[in-house]
Amino acid sequence: MTSGTVRGWALELPGAHEEETWGAATFRVGAKIFAVLRAEDGTASVKANPADQAELIAGDPATYAVASHVGRFGWVRVTLSSADPVELRSVVLEAWRRTAPKRLQLALPDDLRALLPRR
Image (tube, rainbow, N blue to C red):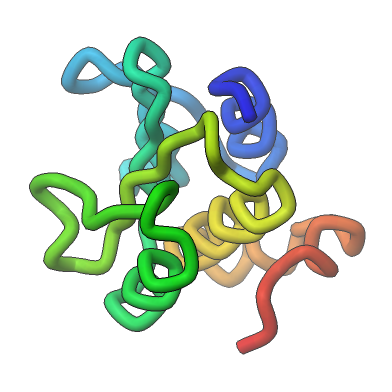
């Protein structure tokens, strides 16, 4: 798993753009951040809720951890080198869905919609 792959996944989502903040690449919909990529240390922080955060960490504690600063809101830190690509793509998609307005969610292509976890 590479930072370039995560960047590509984030930027293919409707309304998403990249902005450098805090010395890292942040991925946003409007002004709202849904993922932060720290290529220099091979990690990403991804928006989640506390229940999903707990599930991800319990399922793979070598890959997922509570993110610094925003972990109390459910964000997870991901070690990219050990992440399962299928699972991480779903996590990034769900982070985008939590952030994007309904009109952009409706614009999500069917092939990507199929990768979202069921609510």
